[in-house]
Image (cartoon, rainbow, N blue to C red; front, side, top):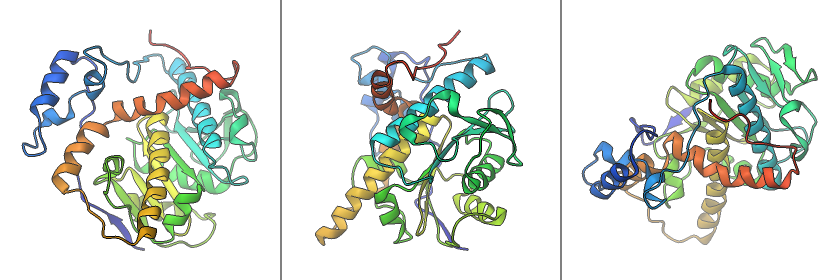
Length: 310
């Protein structure tokens, strides 16, 4: 088995909601790629809103309310993926760790179009692949094997997305990470992994374990060679935004490769600085909200934002 983690980068610090807008603005203004200071991680959401804080990840202490909130956002992520063309038959899955029983997780039902999914359609399963709640129907076996292995090995991962999206499939054939050649690709600086041992449809537990080993302890996204993309996050919104961003990044990279001209790679220093500002969990969560809220608007009441904080 061969795996690659590129440009190891530690210390992406989540934005702190308690930080005042004024302090956040001052910190980012004072920071630069040259100083490498943690000020680079200041809440750029505050900077972007003229001194007013933009609401980030809500604090929901009731695990049952948090469960419903997650399921609403999970359904919204599927609607977004449908609109963006990531469907491919029965392939593709999103999983979310259950806040009531963290040893279990929720996944989409097999054979239902992403564009039709609602929170009530999601299936609650345990680590043995048995349905224990929610919508009691069949789930994709390969999806269970991959996602259960990730949730067991990475307690920091609360959500994972894997789709057979067209540009991700195309780029995965090269068995390499994307180059850091634009601002958006900096979101993946130091957190890309590659799994090169494609062995066919994932039906054995050993294959799921190999994918986990390739992802490693710090990987956020992984290219499954000859297969597609998989992204992870602390929220389903973070994982879903990383997937849409990585799919678009693959599309851009394919166009750049087709041009056949020399590429200008962003320096490690500038890429690290940009990742610290743009790729923290709060910011990635917020980046997903426009797509999610558009799907709520389109759904005519089928989707909602879920429970609000107490």
